[in-house]
Length: 333
Image 1 (cartoon, rainbow, N blue to C red):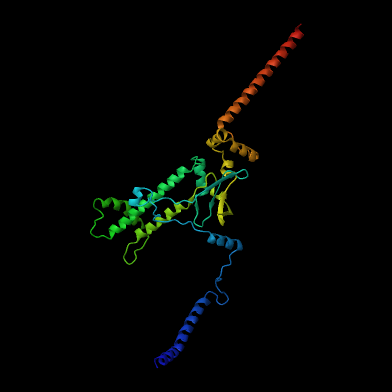
Image 2 (cartoon, helix red, strand yellow; image 1 turned 60 degrees about the vertical axis):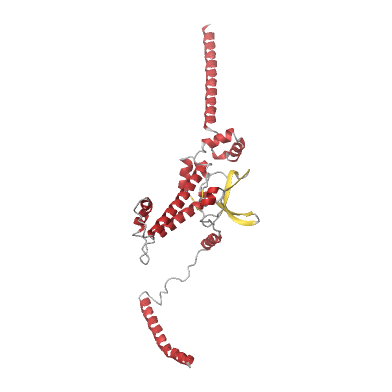
């Protein structure tokens, strides 16, 4: 009986439901009529992407993601790490360097990930040309590691400040907590007008922690391409451990060595310590008008050329003087 009653009740509400649907339909049609409906059907429901753009987007979607872990995997190597835990370390993407006679001595490749980051070309060029950081990137790696550790330490300070704000019996503006408040509270002042509170709870600290995490993770995925520019990367596939992987290859002659002169310390290393590289460069890129010899060797060669020219000019002047004197003497007698 209850089931029949409910079914009959539903049947009674069917006309009402249909009437409501009809009213809403007519209302929407009147609004659409103001914009030219039905002659104007509106925007297309599916955007037809060009084949190349779609293939490119699919390629990036299929790339793997470089995974990092925080907190780091617990593998203590010292007593200090066993007691306090391992220190934060940059989980950078390795560069695999190789050399051969076809591609040169400074070629390398990195695995291609969808969350890979590079420096802009102009910044990479400035670092290499103006700061002379070309082959040895240990300084850049040290700076990145210092920034990463600094971000991790600061994020822990933000977490401690948030925890203190929930403990009402701790006054954060008394010693020693006042130093922590001075180091962190400025972020709340900056973000207070941007990030709204949720149910009366201030979430600026959580948002700022998320920003710090994104920046730190970007440092993990940052690849330095010296002596090449990031735009010189070539996408290809290679078989690694019986697994076909997408990689980015940097090979042949770096474009900056063609636009600008090769750093003199590199040319000195080739000339004095590794003449095989110098011979390869002179043979492979002899038509590009690039200077491969060190500056001091060029200066010595110029001096030798100048001395030889002077000696030839002196001998020529002496011979001419002798001939002139002999002619004058013959005419005189």
